Image 1 (tube, rainbow, N blue to C red):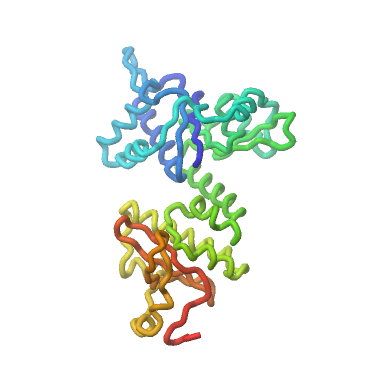
Image 2: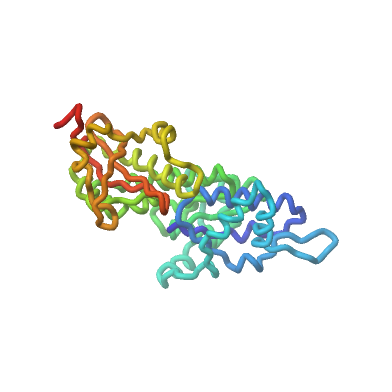
Length: 325
């Protein structure tokens, strides 16, 4: 789970332009939507956090009120839905251990991190919220009210710690794409055949895996594991789109995605070779497949209810009519 810490510094002073506030909120939420499994930490309930003060009036409009106004628009309706689905935690330090709180209170911002000097003023402005992200691998979320929030990563140095403290930052959609790719690369760098069972849900959150896959991975060609992870990520993205109703995997769509069925003759002669236990332990035929190099395959089953892709086999190609061994 990724902790998103809402940057209090970007909430003041209050906006006096409704359109600018709405645009900045939309940009931030579209950036956050690039990440998976989020919890949004805020110092206060976003229904009570004022963001707009209309000129010549004392009336204010809260952060969440602005987001809910998006439901009345076609182009921002999806942003309001995303905000509704976000897990929100208030106060921002809820769930932190005593050790984490002590580190947070004692950490010092002594200087800029190498190669991130341009972000140091923003770190100082964000203060405790920035420190919390740096210490707990969180993401600082800001409204892009000025150029200091136009970055996807920040950092600083605490002279008592032997390494620079860096953390991700999002205020726009393009930041979210960069941060998502960087975090995915960090996770993949730790992924091996041995720890696949532990990390598979973190790396590929929109896939299911049959009960035999972990054992199959251990026998997978080490030289092709990197390509296998790439194929799984492609399937993960397809499964995400299918689950969101944005893609219907049938016919041409499958072919374009590299998903192929077996021939009728192969299934007649070797269908039993494609029977594996699914995630529930039930025997299922995993016919459709993708290539991983010349000799290895990933066999899948596309569930309809709920719509999701399940991987049942990863290994050397299974017997076919043309290649029975």
